[in-house]
Amino acid sequence: MSSPVVTTIGDSTVSECIKLMLEKEIGSLIVVEENKPIGIVTRRNLFDQIIMKGTSLTKTKASDIMSSPVLTVKPRDKIDYAVKVMRGKGTTAVLVLDGSRLVGILTETDIRLRLRIDPLSYRSILKRYLVDTFAYIVFWSGFTVVIQVFIVGISMDKFVESSILGFIVTVVFSGLFGRFLDLLRNKFKA
Image (cartoon, one colour):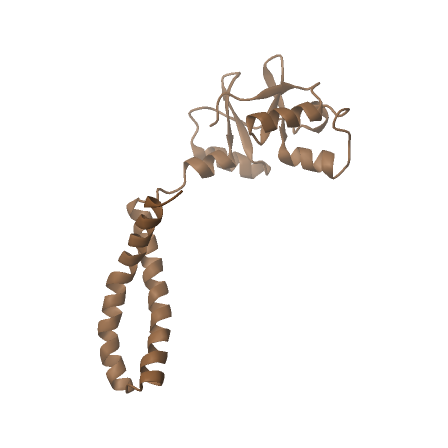
């Protein structure tokens, strides 16, 4: 979750909400009344209500465009439960409440950024190794047939015989070559 949560009151103008969201670099703003969340203003609310309907930025209040009621989870709830709550209601954010106290907000962006697979994990390396190996086999197999059989003029028997060794070399080294390229990319990233 992201914490602390940036909040506003229902009487804030949409213009003030946009300014606050830009300052804090956030995609949603929680509307509170007496320190209790009563709604959420998201980029989508802004797009639907302001841009598509052309309502006034200075006359429209946060309470006029907010989504309400807000969806909530508890701090100890599992991520998959929070995702299920979001998907069930077609939203991209849930508030995290500890009792009645607002302690955070969990968005799809938070989940995507924090739970992505580590590029150096064994699963990620194995997956990329297999994908690279398959890609190299497909590309180089076709390329090799064209060069050796049609351009150089090697017979198909000789090609098949040499292809077995070539296939083994491709399987062994293509994935390793891809990992070597990954390491170089990471080392020289700007």
